[in-house]
Amino acid sequence: MYTALAIAGSDCSGGAGIQADLKTMSAHGVFGMSVLVAIVAENTSRVISVRDLDSDIIADQMTAVFEDIKVDAVKIGMLSCPETINVIYKKLLEYKPKNIVVDPVMYAKNGAALMPEGSIAVLLKTIVPIATLITPNIPEAECIAQMKIKSREDMITACKKIHSLGVKNVLVKGGHYDGDAMDILYDGKEVYTFVTERINTKNTHGTGCTLSSSIASNLALGHSVYDSIKLAKEYVTGAIRHSLELGKGNGPTNHFWKFFN
Image (cartoon, rainbow, N blue to C red; front, side, top):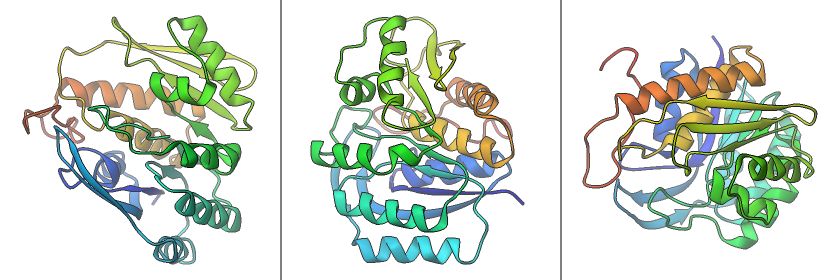
C-alpha cells in the first residue's frame, strides 16, 4: 500500500485543507495520513478564525507517523507561523521523505490572508529549498517572485525566479486567468505547459489543496513529476466539472467524482 502524508490546516466545511487532502489521497488509492498544524473556522464564503497548534504537538504528530509507517510522499499546505514552519523543517530533515510537495497557501478562495509576510520568508528559506515541487497560484507566485504576472512569459520568468530558491520543480498555476486553465512547470532545464478546459462554475473551493494532494499521491504511486502533474490536472478538472452545489459561496469540488457523480 502506497502512502502520503498531508501537513496542513483543517477546513471544518470539508472542501479544503486536511479534509480535502485525505479525500483526494483516498480517491487515488493511496493511504492518507495527516499532521494538523492549525484549526481553521471557515466555510464556502469566509474564514472566521485560525488557531495555530503548539509546535510540540506538531512535532509529536510527525514523529508518530514517521517512526511507524513508511511515507512515500508528503504534501504541505497552510503553514501560518514561523514556529510551525521551523519545527516541520527540522522533522523533514530528520526523516528525509523522498517526495515533498509544497502548496504555499497564502490566501483563501475569498482572498482572506492566511500567511503573514514573516512566515512567507521563513518558508522560502527552510522548506522550499528541500522540496520536490512548489505549486503557487498567480498571486502567490507574484508574492514569492516579487513581480507582476500578466502573460505566459511572465509565468515562465516567475518559475525561474522561484526555482533559484533551491526547489527542484516549480509549477505556477494560471487559474486566475481567463480562458483555458494553463499551468507552467519548470524543472531547472525545460519549461512545460499544461492546458486543460476551464469549467464554468463558482464551485472551486479547495482546488489548490486538491491539486497538490493529487500530485503527491501520484508521486507516491511512482509517477514522474511531469506525469504526476498531468494526471492531477485531469483529476481536478473532473472534480470541478462534477463540483457540488453546497454552501452559499464557492462550493467544493467532488473528490470522488470517478466513483459517484
